[in-house]
Amino acid sequence: MTPITLTQPGATTPHQALDPPTGSRMWASRLIGALFLAGFVIYGTGSILVNSVLEGTDFLKNVDTMQTTLALGAFLMIATTAVDIGKAVIFYPVLERQGKRTAVAYLATMVFEMAMMTVGVLALLMVIPLAEQSSDGRLDAGVAQALGSLAVDANETAYQVGQLSLAFGALFLTVLLLRTGLVPTWLAGLGVVGYATHLVGAAAEIFGVPISLVLLVPGAIFELALAAWLLTKGFTAAVYAAPRALPATATAARPQR
Image (cartoon, rainbow, N blue to C red; front, side, top):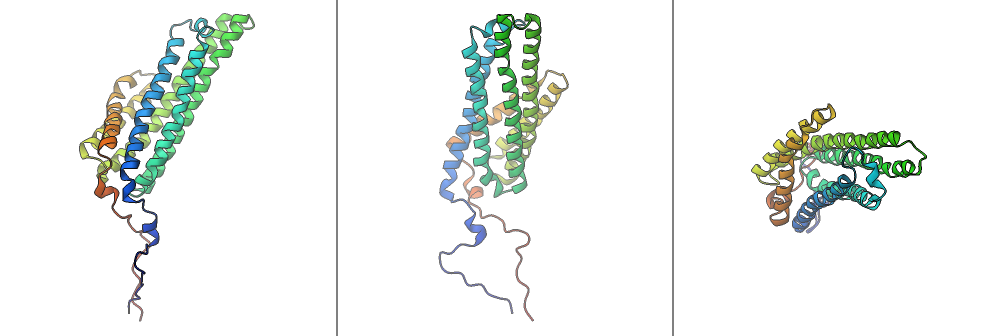
């Protein structure tokens, strides 16, 4: 005979208890969408401020008078770390219901990306003491400028390595979105193309081929479109609310003899 398990009315099975309530769909969608937009605004603003100080070949002369601008820009760039990691953490339970390995990979690559970008920004902040020592005469102006340029190059390299990691993890993310239908097919397909080209662009930059600025455009369009979609429509309700698949080990009990 096959054993029968009695379940009290209203009780939930262990795997059902792990499923997020369907009422949280729009809350999670809008929060993730808002964080996508916040990342653009915060990092973009910080990058503009930093570049306004570090433009030109003799930028150390600008640092003394624009130190606050440089520090504020660097702070905003680092603040993007909290935004992007928060986005990945909130995204995790949504993705984990559809594919745990993809969810883990996306979270891990986002953490690595933010770590690399933070290292790059910290390198930029080394420009401030270099400018001070150069103006005080404690360090030769030519040496200080060379070290400052090295710090800027270190930030650029760390940024591209971080973007390579982001594109790699997000490519798996968009493939999952395409396969499951959490977002419309056209939107997920745009993401696959966008992150694939972004991956190529970041890798090319690391090897000295400056083409990433063009190749990141499809990925940027995808992120803006995804943010707009999540803020207004949210994840596809039927897919989001679908029960989590049972683990492969959870099989029916064999009939007893």
